[in-house]
Length: 451
Picture 1 (cartoon, rainbow, N blue to C red):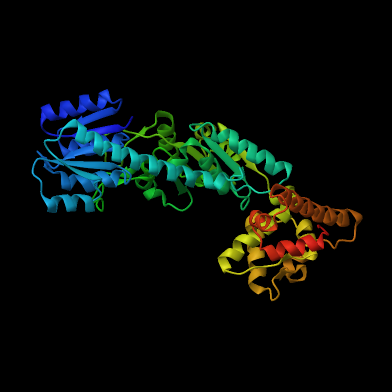
Picture 2 (picture 1 turned 180 degrees about the vertical axis):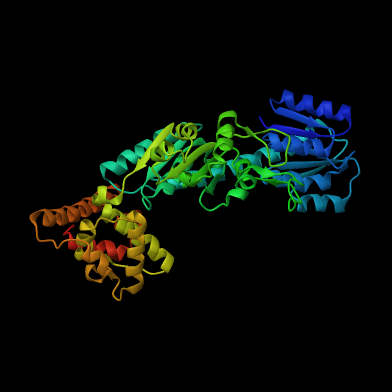
């Protein structure tokens, strides 16, 4: 047993006994004689279990219990009292207490209670582990495609994930999937059981930015009627993601830099330093180097984020992944619509291979969703693609265009064969991996003459 404990007991002899007992068990122990002091400990330290006395000098433990659970809803609280009362016990459990212990109690009884806590803790950890491992089932992190660009991207994500403190800057055009890369980094790292908190730098007004990120103390400004934890504090133990970093207010940039360097901050209106442990990740489609040269972005903050830099290639640079992406999107959108679709026809893929996709994967998804809503026969037809899309490409008259279209079909055929081989020829399992209906797979097997 190696829990982080907080003992909240006003009786000094009992408090010292419990501290000594848990330290001998190998636990990290903090102690407080009052509820207010205990809440302050929880604001600055990570704690697994709180032993909370019902009667404290500054109020009832039942009053402090909700405040403690508000700090961390996963916190395990064991209530202690020398005055057994069924009503108080029920109220404590309703407010989130794990158990209710009657004093005086012997250490054997306490051991039994802690054994139940340990079993609960291990079960919860296993569930969190399974939830975290699910996105990595095929070690893709959700990054699809067999092109060199996507293979290198997955490898880089895997390496970056192994360094849970290094800052990361994800760059790429709009719609390339930068947020998906951030999600993959978080899911593959040891921080995956912690929160992933997103901050859209372009969506929060400058005058609210500091209060939203740092939080505030009661009375910090007119409408601050209670204490509020900010996004930075909520991300403790996890990842803090700054989306559209180039839009971050110049006024806030030095404040963020200080927190990143010192790993402590204060809420708005606060006087207490709060230690925070997060990984900082950012994404942008801006040219930050140019912004630094123009004085629109701090150079020191830019280099602080650029410890690890990941570039997400635009779709036009890996069009060989189109068959995989199209099949995946058809499966995903089909699930959302509650329908099965046969897939794209040859013309659809040929036109898609020649289009430049300025909106990247986001544009591809929008086009596919439109086609899936309008189709009458379950097929996505090239002739039904938006007129402006078809007008923006040349007709496939050159040998180069014909060769590109043929290559795309061969890539899809190769991908299907590879997935079938992985599943020992089981078509139902292959269809699940490809995220398409079994009937769609049957049609593709027939089209590509795969037995």
